[in-house]
Image (cartoon, rainbow, N blue to C red; front, side, top):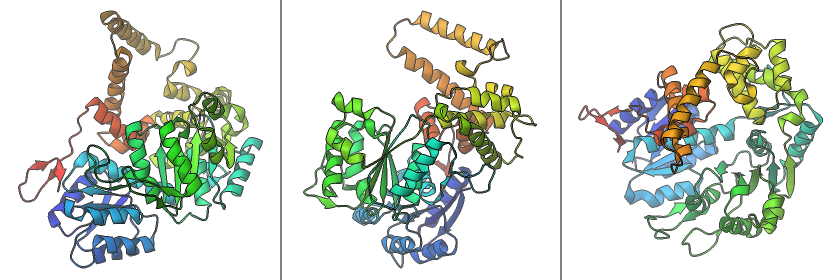
Length: 490
């Protein structure tokens, strides 16, 4: 259970946060002054701090500086009113995770808190390499002993203690983010910030401002200055995932960063020196992208100072038994059940399947099989039922066939009713997605963390889907002053 510390002199706001975050499954502590907050961080390090700027005694900025001395990687979210925005921006430049203006909407602050917790976990959780399956404390591990993986371990060991830019290549699901984290954790910057930017997940119109920041008036809606993630990670490491999909216009600014070691905010008046290490990853064929004009050749060569390729799972089948035992052991600990093991038939099936989704697909299949397993070792049938896609369906008729028949009939009826309708495919997929999310939430009594785990999604992704599909999960904070429910915290 993640532990969150709230530091604010407003008693009512602290109570509201305590109710809200406790309902989300977090452990919450609170302090009314900056001095008390620093003492609590020193006594028992939380996973994240949410702190006001203006308080009696030392300010939130001074308190953050002291917390940073205790643990530089502790994610801190600064709360501020409009009048103290510049102070919050300064805290962000010092390395605070982000800041938020009061009053704020509950869904927005919950998303920001989840992002901060994820960043903290990435920075502090150790990624083990070539660890034996079944050992304690190996939830985050790069598992494999085949020759291709031995080359990956060597490359990590050589690259980590340098400041060289690293380009990690491999298909989706091969573990590129784990390798990036391992490089960071074994580097000389391991006690400095580590920020992850997914170049696909952020819309093109927002990616440039997210990376480089902006000044007031730089574009419509830019009501104040915003520090970019690269500037925020000064002296640390930035992992640019899916860099092959970065727009060409932003590639030019990234090239200037690598060449000249500075950034320029949108609407800014001059360069700002920064010292960051860039680790990038992609599943795209960059050479083809360069030839087709979709990726800058000069940036390509700047990125691949150290280049490593992660092999797909089909090229290292000898590692599948190790990976399977690792995931079953890990998910058993997470769920709180005894490790059931796998039958020989299940292991034969795992080693024989092509796994187009690579290690991620293997992990998801094992996690679902374990969740729905009714005792005893995991069998081949458990894996077939857990995977549920055409590639893994049994050759002979099985219990899943009537459901597929119903689904096919529904799809045919929908297509016949609205043939050629614009957005028809997306509409159908959204309807199915909405049902799947709703059922997962029903099975977990509305617990979003457990539902995300059940579906093999990250919690932020699940929250985004809930919002997209308009699913209603009541989250209310009762304020002592009025006793009414509120959708905002101020």
